[in-house]
Image 1 (cartoon, rainbow, N blue to C red):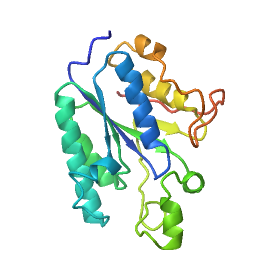
Image 2: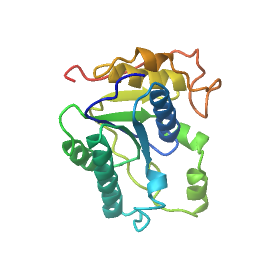
Image 3: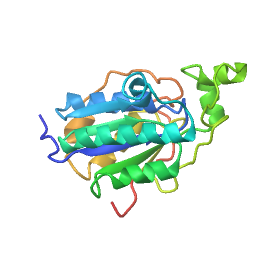
Length: 213
């Protein structure tokens, strides 16, 4: 069993609805846990059913949603967890405030990059279909803005990288902090390409961490 990280880390997965944040977060968590690491996922959709159920989708409520998730993530990280947040967090200012809540080098913004046209084609939760039908309003990337990260720590192009390739990119980044050899040997069990991820043999560009990390 690998030694757990003494001081936790937060990976915040941001991107449009349908970009692959939830799938990637869950797979990354399982790979970490199978190698003995303490890892947890905070999924924004799940948290909106509980502690954030009083919030809507106005700009102010979206900012408060991010703030609350950030505080929960900070508590888990303080206990030594690798925290994986799957949350759109559409505004740069909110993401920057979140970064400032963590010690230097313990918070990493991961841009799960997929064009809105690709996300509309995937539409795993039916949000884009409902938006076209007028059943839901304020859909990020369609009727509500999404401010792309300007200097993310990791960029994952889910249409060009397989799911395993995306997780390996995160493990490469995490390798700055722990020995990831055991993590790479731990298999998650996906033998297929979940929606929108490239097939395992597909090649594609990888942008890994900034050089100053």
